[in-house]
Image 1 (tube, rainbow, N blue to C red):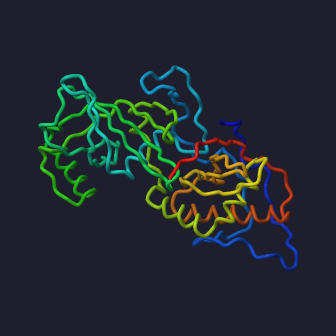
Image 2 (image 1 turned 60 degrees about the vertical axis):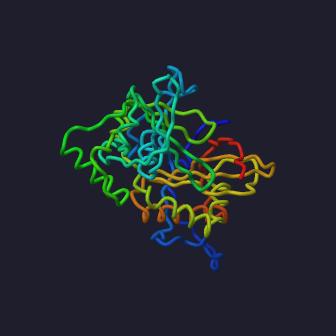
Image 3 (image 1 turned 90 degrees about the horizontal axis):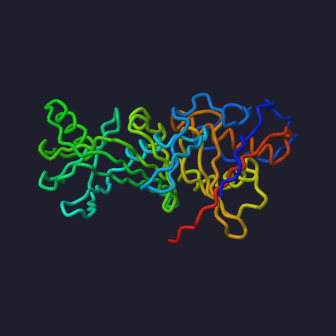
Length: 330
């Protein structure tokens, strides 16, 4: 169930507050503290919005409908998410039709050509299907709570250019620290991609051009460690974020950060009735590295603490986009 989306705060400027003579201690900062207690309002209008504004929404993987929807600008586009999934993963399921018409899937390792995201495979040519049309399904588990995935449809090809083969061999060596015979190198020529946020969820189709032009998220290599650090040491801040920045009609029983990217982070929270929701909380501005993400988190923590203690009294709008999700069994 997805409700209406609003920005997290209004565009009114936030001024420094006058604290009591002996205020209680502020929240525990991360490694890179914020230099100032002043903090610009959080909005969903960012300095550098995602490159893609709309995609076809999938209700059935076999038959994409014609309806479209606008992808929110406070989160990476499906093409960016897919490029990130491909960069962080190395194992996939390669599927094609056998000569007798049955679908066949096999687990494969893959590397990614960094400029356009082309998947690079290594397998025995005797397995090469009669029909080169194929799909490559890739998953990325996030915090044990969510598994975003992408399915690339395209054609399996054997590169013939010698210089290209040398380049692909070098990419494979860098990814897996092993040499591979050029006769075993194949690629998937990407035609279209389906990106889904989790199991049992609908997805979004987009074109190979969207995929090739997208850039993997700059926080991808540090996102897991940031999430682990915050969930371990800053749980009080996550609960405070839900109460201050999110429009809720219940007290949060449990909250965990799921993932963080250049535009914000996702939180999974539980109500007293054990209903499970996900909410997107944007950063005040786009970040480009781990230091920027931690600094933004610290500033948001300071502001939320001041609002909770009523040191800030200005009006603001809260995020009210909640997505109810099924609780995953262990």
